[in-house]
Amino acid sequence: MFTQWTGKCLFRLSTAETGTVFLKQRRIFIMPTRAGLIFGLMLMVLFICSINYNLSLGFALTFLLASCAIVGMHLTFRNLAYLHLSPGRTSPVYAGEIAQFSVQLDNRRSYERYAIRLAFITDGAVGIPHFTDIPSHASSDVTPSTPASERGWLTAPRIRLQTTFPLGLLQAWAYWQPAMQVLVYPRPEADSPPLPLSAGTQTDGRGNAGYDDFAGIRAYQSGDSMRQLAWRQIARSNDGALVSKQFEGGAASELVLDYSKLPPTMDVEHKLARMTSWVLMAEAQGLPYAFHLAHLYLPPSIGPAHQAACLQVLALYGHAP
Image (cartoon, rainbow, N blue to C red; front, top):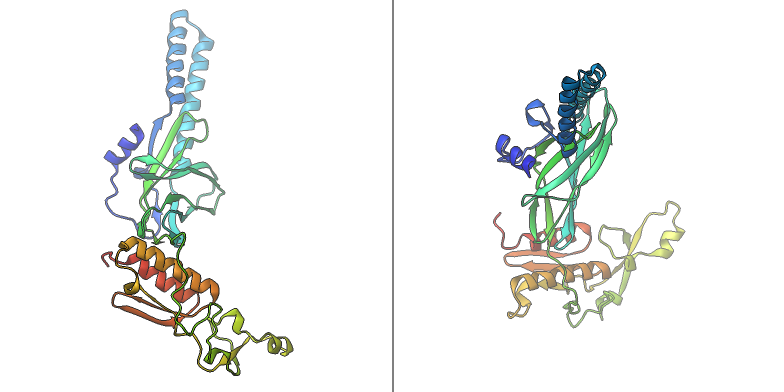
């Protein structure tokens, strides 16, 4: 608690820090640990006893231990100072999951760093710690995590880096507020109803009229269903190029995920959860689908890019741009 209070009072991070951050001397704080306080008390007792009984070996032992503590203090400070911190990549998650933020610790010095402890600080509490060693002239990737309870953009909490290497008598720490965000999608509805397919659409993506009318073979396009691949022609080709079957008409535009068509008795979050579930179901079944939410309309498509665009709209619905 004292170290957290000291860090807040002596070094306040008002805004997120973009790019690579250098841990210079003024950003490092150092204090004795509980073991260090006991060690200091022991040195005082040894020193007093050596004076009272005029013990030459007592003085030698006291000064030797004190010298080790001073050297340890320098090594503890050096183990954390002069690191370069860089934000890494993030991946979207669903509400209720754990968001992970990848960060990189770069050691550009000729000595190694040991047992560096890294953890998020949320609401004054320290999260799950991650420990790492960094060789000289090398870097280490660490992935701290935090719960993602609500949809939208989740900003990375403040990070606390700490070390007690080598003796555990002192602890050095520093704070870093990286400019990182993770997009949190709405949590999919657990038991959502079937997809709102139109009368002319079957659950396997075939239409009663058009989709059964084979029209020929064309080159594979991103987003084509696995059911559309012409496996016989692919096996016969020399280069193994992917080709798809082409049908006249079809059900590509008959599946529309429309937010306004949901029951008015459902609240906003429930509607978004159902829409999220339907997007995942359509992708799993290989059904091209259109997406309609408020004033935004996305034409029928399928694939990772279309799915990500729909989920992002759902995640940010009602949030300020």
